[in-house]
Image 1: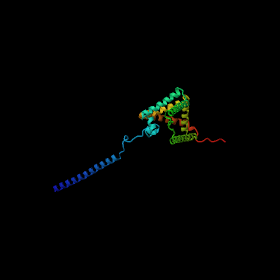
Image 2: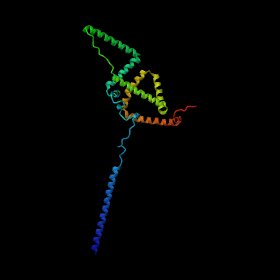
Image 3: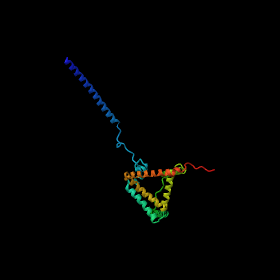
Image 4: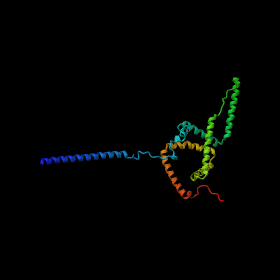
Length: 256
């Protein structure tokens, strides 16, 4: 009788152990599956997500592509140093010739034409006297298609500028109006300091120095530009709250 009770207890204990093992095994599997699911659902770390970097003027393309990506961009960004240096040297020589030496453009053109025609005339007479036949002077013609393309591009840009000025004058955007007025005012001050030739030469120098410097040090310039842009926006919010918001918007009504 005692042996029968002992065997029953042993069976019950073995059954309890099997049940507990199954429960623990199910819990481990469920925990492992939940861990795997959590690993799958776990979002990516912030370092793996590419943050948007502030770029000057809101550009999204490289500087070379902003300037067109062709030969003009190569010249401005000094991809071909010989062409860039020769172009800048030619512009500098022309500025020294006309501005510092006070040589006039019309006078220079006339002197070049006089010298060229005189040399060609003497060469033609000498060739006719020696070879008994007139020389073959090459015929020079301006191609029509490139000239028309340049004129068409200039016409499109001028019309676009007129459309922008008309939109600003209509009073729809006060911010743009103030920016354009400030730009014209600064340009008028700069124009009073120097003539058009000097202003053109300064623009060429800036175009040949600022873009290449920015492309080289853009990682240092962009954070500074971001801070400056933030400060300007903050000052504009203050100006808008105190002054611009009090200005009536829309077209003025005529008094009868």
